[in-house]
Image 1 (cartoon, one colour):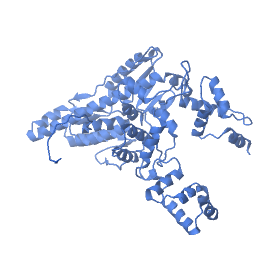
Image 2 (image 1 turned 180 degrees about the vertical axis):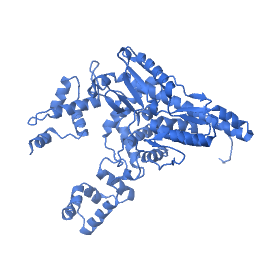
Image 3 (image 1 turned 90 degrees about the vertical axis):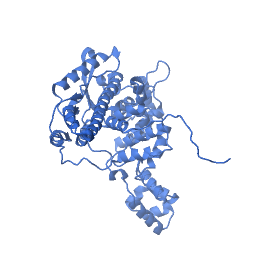
Image 4 (image 1 turned 135 degrees about the horizontal axis):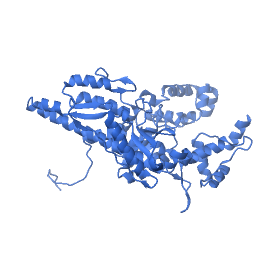
Length: 484
């Protein structure tokens, strides 16, 4: 059959990530402090933008509107999503030159307490999180759910680039399966820098050795005896690893050439204070009031008078002004959508976790991101983006939004009551803290006590949570407390 060029029509559906959609996603991921810095950058680029740091009386009105809506809508009798009305829009405020306005507005904005002005450098090095998400995004063979799981793992990395939290705990928080997270972890550990996503030092060094093509059975044995490497007992190591002294010396030199903290070369994220994005306050009818933190939420406006003055100066300038006006309006709409989305998700968290706000961690209920996503009609990835890095402040303290997510544990049968993993972990920790040093509680005994308390948890689950919290076994605790 001869091959020849030809034209054909084909209909297909695909998602195109326009610059506007990318900007909306970025805004959704930012907390209020990061948003202030981003708006300062936009202010330098777009001469029609004005940012009003203090929102004055209008902010108070917006808070009251939100308060009334949430007071009535997330009370015990009517737990529906609160809708907020915002006053961000167009106003004719200034007719000053853009350079003067940029200098004035730059001096008003601040990040981490430091003023941002025209002299402030806006660029910054790529963070570890950005680098990893970019690498994961370029892996075309990964399924969408694996990408989402890998992004969740990136958010769990500590400053060294290690994954401290057990996979089962992360699975509980995000409503994902452990096998899916294991697949995502494999993808994450294939990223640069080598060694990222390790659970401990041995795994970190193993990943780097594999990346260099040096890992073999001898190195595997050596990594099982890292304390001996640290103590310098080479005679013992040579016997254990079964290599010559010269080979052992080269192997140890190779280990010392590896990076035990691969994530430290890039900051995981810009260091910011845990400034609340949302406040949860007692409301009417024994409900709760949800308010955005408008003190750190700038108000974006379009200077239409200045746009009209510039448009009159010629067709080329008018075209530029039209482009700037469209960009400014899109930014305003994206900020409105961001605010509404944060309020919707927070309102659903409050509706589900009412007992936590009244009684504490022991009363935390099972809640997955998929549940909230279904209730507000959004994708689970949207909930994940909002939950990460956003904080709420309530009478019990300041918590990251993702703290409130976790799958059900301990429910069996139609009448069995399920509990959040964090609530069970808290109960286990309290039981162990209060135990008799001479009669430490076994995992079986703890499971019996939990069952009597209405938490139907298996012994292996108790052991899994105990080990995940770094708590020793009953025998080891008894020896430790007796000083033996």
